[in-house]
Image (cartoon, rainbow, N blue to C red; front, top):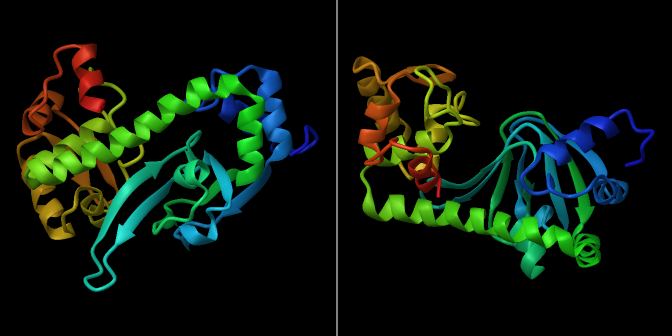
Length: 247
């Protein structure tokens, strides 16, 4: 992408605000933009990761989820949900191999992409990027660890409450929408906690009757954070507690 592109300024702004690239200086960001091409993918596009693993991707807008499915039962589990500023195909960046994952766009998305080999060369040329990359990899590992913990140790109500709380930006608001997931279908929420649509629907309706959430088609908001935290076996006593909950 060149500075003459009409998308250049917005792409640079997205990198500056992202967790992965936000601490880098402008010159370094300009360098990586010069190596990237901009792509747009339509909503509900399904791609086996085998078709995308040779390029590293940085989301500019929209959401992408990475999932695994059982070909016999059709059951699916969502491993990662990515939003603007996130990078994906991260494992292939690390080991140079394709992985048995399904990539799905939840919205029309815009993204930057760069060949994996060139990405590795860029990382080697910019050691400062490792200061952001290693913690970011750690965050992704925590996502998988949280999923494993939820599936092994918690019932459906607790898993759903924990999922919603992990996507909350404001632990103080009396009425807050969970970031990235507030417009997902109950089926999509079920795929994020290893359950099925009917169970998630029944649980949300129960919470709605209790005044804990406001949930209807394509919309989810939390009305009583402390009550939801109790369902999640969590505490909202302090910022430190919230940080622990998100890890």
